[in-house]
Amino acid sequence: MIICIAAPPDDPEAEEYAKRIRKDGFCPFQAEGIHMGFIRAVERLDSGYLITIEVTEPEIEEHFRSLKGNK
View: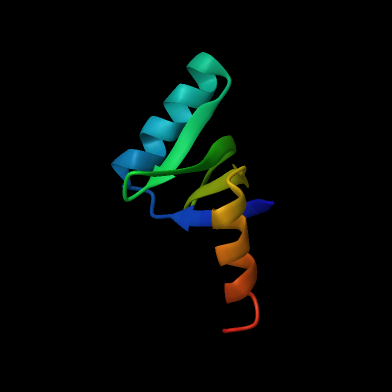
């Protein structure tokens, strides 16, 4: 599953992700200590960062799919 998240232009984590992608070509992604997948791209826009994440953990993917209809 591919998800995109937005971050403000002054977000230090987003900047770190962008640096790791440029340096290493990949970057693991986790939230609250839980591995979710890998960052595939980080775009720097005027409004901030657009971070593309490939979710590789089945439990996390199920969680995001359950949220789809609960907007």
